[in-house]
Image 1 (cartoon, rainbow, N blue to C red):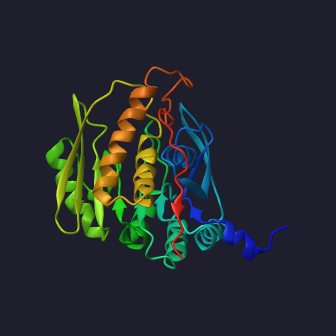
Image 2: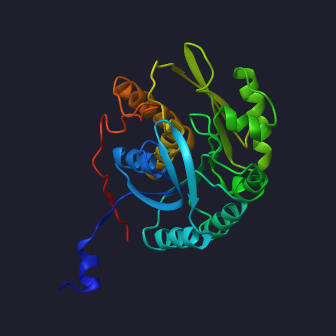
Length: 287
């Protein structure tokens, strides 16, 4: 058996590691499962801290079982201290206590960028978060985020306004920035029209609109989870934030297009995360 020193001498590479802090989707299309598929498809090494177990399929969510906050914090510490992720994605945070626990756990790793998808409403319209938790998210977790990625329903809650068009999205992004995040990406996938728009705004006042053609598909379950974990993956691979977003938008478009004609369940089916899977990237360890 090799001694630890001898083993370390043989290991000259590392994988780009991404940590997903999110809920589990028993249907496999969203949450932790979508995150792991996305991270793996993009050549990164996925790790997890599971916040809740949902009873879920393509037809919707029928139950949520929270994981104890102490266990969530222990998962985060175990991964951060040993595998040392280069980026973190946060998904479903269902309680104020959990939000505070995650914030406390991550406060020990301030240099690792966080992509926070503030999951409040599922694609099928189900509420996934206690509404009294929103204020705690704003004060404890949002300021830690490199990027927030709310969809239109979530952005409307956070901005306190109706969002009906691109102009409204820009106003909402400006309002959401007041909570202290580095940048926000308001996702416009729920708007009707031939083109879809996502609005980016950062603390320097830089605004950018990402446009893509709408794809007629009934398989969009987990799109938001997959986009945020893709952004985290590209950051782990070394991309700057806007480049990571741009690359992730292309990945999601292709994943939707490649999965639109597949029946997986009787409701909103998943994306095709593995339309062009990448091998695990090996990064040279610099002593």
